[in-house]
Length: 379
Image 1 (spheres, rainbow, N blue to C red):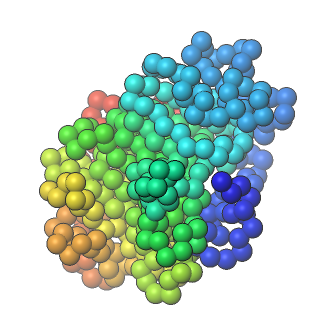
Image 2 (cartoon, rainbow, N blue to C red):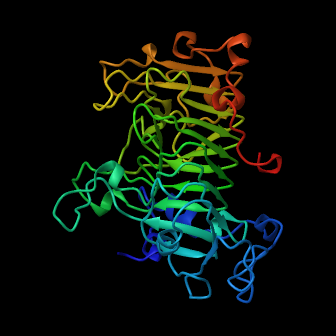
């Protein structure tokens, strides 16, 4: 596999923004959080060490061999059963990782308390050829796949640094950074980097409940880069749309593409978030509905509320169809009290709005019921 530094050599093209996100240093030393920058003698910060474990079910990952394992997948494979914690030292872990459904209640912690320092990355795409000659497909392209319930991650970057130029002429450019399918999955202060299909918020089956929470996270991409059928809540998150030099006209892509199961009353909720863009003004749609062939009765649901939408979002027509047979107007799309140039309402019929009574139920508590993710300090 090409090294991560290859991406950093790019000076133009669709991958430039991704390479900057992967390699850029923190803006200030204070961004490292309570423990501050880590030195070589303290690779795991305040989270213990192999000699002084947080708990008996804590494993330490260090790319240079100072932990229990040098790879994340090695630690996951060793963590058989429930309730394990993995503490990841700063470094770039170029590998694919899969957490099976049996490994419930697992927690990943970025030891420096800065997601920029701990990067799990690979570059498979849907059109990438497997060793057996088949292609990975969208789901198989994921750098990290989480099937277990009760997964929590803090201060981790999940990335897929595939570039469209890696497979010229190939339409299989979907490249997932994280596919999460478990119920009660929570991500705090994490980053999700990719281009098309960056963050796949999914479930194990059409009939399975998958509540997922993302707080103070950063997500970037271009086409449908937050998608899936999970009941997912995003609070205080930053969504960044990328410049595509392979296209000269709008739209460059879509932020959300929910595929909510018809019987699920709640799909995606983005609350107190912001959307910014490095593309020209109006070159991105806020969302389009995804009705997959595996669930033709899907009824996509999205609420964006109390959020700041930058000028990159097309205010005149913020929604579009993925397939004409499933028009966005027939889906469950709505907004409430958004601000910013991308939230203007020049054509009211193109921007469904919730009333105060409807907005009262568009909350994390309503979406999650008896599940309270994280502690108060995480929100």
